[in-house]
Length: 277
Image (cartoon, rainbow, N blue to C red):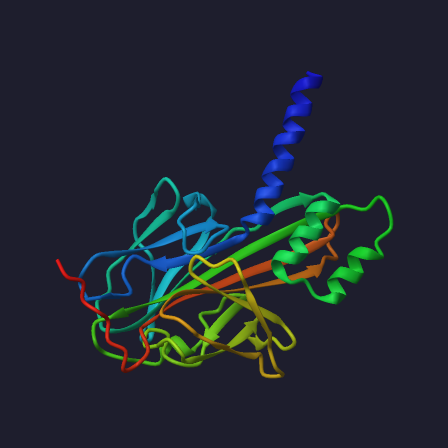
């Protein structure tokens, strides 16, 4: 019995460590453009190296999974568990730029002090959060409930609309201020962060290019805006974490994780070289 408890404790610690190091959860379309009336899907996954499909999401963990096109939104269809991801089916009836998002149900974790320090590095924790943790008196525990939010875009047909520029209603959300399906390498991307429907100022937002572990952070201004230079063509992940102290019993912290994925085209005037057979 003693050995069993010891092994269980080790396994629990490992799960907690993985929860911290693989905390990014993102949503990406199978294809960035699709014609109305054609079946397509999105992939929801978690991992340490965007955009590698790494850890599958249990369908029961999904609280919300929707796409908004023009003025209407609908639930994503078939939810199919894959080896390393959850596939969410969709078929668009009209043309436009679809905003698709998923939100997971709250989950609790507990961390050791060494795991907390790694966590702070991953999310670029604010000085206020670090100080709050530093002055805590014993028994010093880290019990946290977190919620994950993920968003992306799909161009349906050739019609354009501006619905992508409006929040979908997540409690923590990154909203682009230019067409997310027409961005090119060397463009500047301005986003605004919205928390509970209001601009979130003095908030850290990170961006990472596909296959790159180096994250570049910016701080939002008074209007919740931050600007990033998209240096290369390819896939980008924007990510942010709102970590705050909790007032709930038996809980020290609460957090919201949010991500946004986009794909940029080659810069204007650059021709892609055709490979010879």
